Length: 420
Image 1 (cartoon, rainbow, N blue to C red):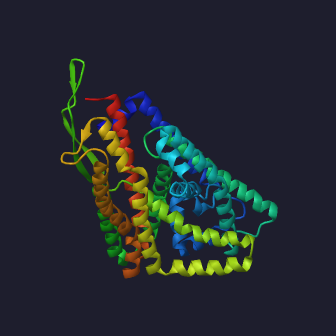
Image 2 (image 1 turned 120 degrees about the horizontal axis):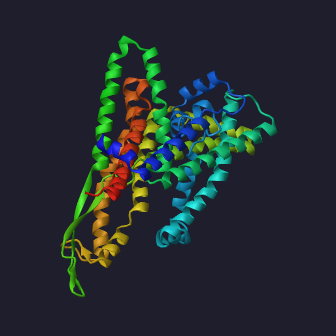
Image 3 (image 1 turned 60 degrees about the vertical axis):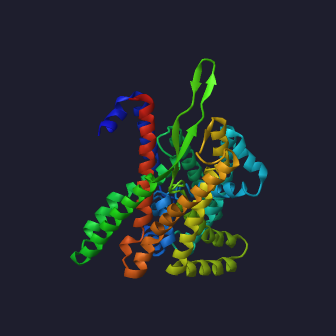
């Protein structure tokens, strides 16, 4: 409570908090503005029957449930980021821009991701609108109305991408994650209201199970996110003029879960891609689009295959994102330049290999935990048939992870201004 009050006593931090809150309010307003021609009842039934689109509704911040002009949320930007990260493994020039050109290179890389977001958003908008028309959620549209809606939805995605960048610039949390976070939290009042209106005393064990699972997930997420392996680092003494530097010991913290909630978001985006691809194929062959839709829906309705693939994707993306954001060889070079070394390990490449082995082992636990949490609601649904828990694990994982990261960044801002 003392830290919370301190936030509003420091003018600069108070301004940052109010700016972020204002931007999130703007997002919620746009999420409530629907595109023309929506059948609300059919839309609600369709989203309830399709689990993957239920997940997508989470990542769109609840905008999909209203078929708003920002219905795609930050999905196209996340997909563009995945594609750009994969391209760094194929094209050395992109890898050089991302790793070797510092902050300027990262800014250029992000700019390319922004450019790629626009065509991806347009393609996803067309595919999704076509899917909704085929399910009679939307009335059939004229060519002009189709182009208008595609432009509206694409503009909405680009607008959210811009909002996310503005939030990130305030340095109290990742903008993309906070938009998703606000969408999940924004749905809590209506969810609680729905539970109270449909209260059934025979479902008390279900409510208790949901509460226990929520507490376990929250405790597990906090435990894994805060867990770290401390690698001891010693610094050699250096004499410069009449002063002696170094000669102290410290440690390098290696997080158990370096990737945070990003692998979950990546995996969901990749699982959504085949459905959008099936809809886009209607541009070339309506019959092919129908057949592809049948195959995709058959896959999505098989809980065992779907859960297995979801688990594997989360684990793989955890390793992939950790490899992209944490370079052991670069860390070892920085340590060597500053006169630091791991006791018993030679500086340079041997230190990089040592750190690489440690991060691979610690990431294994983080990856398995994220995978289990991601599919836990699916496993519960398979074993017990409880629909109430179908989205609980992923939503709680995102909310808790984003809250912890935001708290950490706010703490760092307070330390800069109120160092004791």
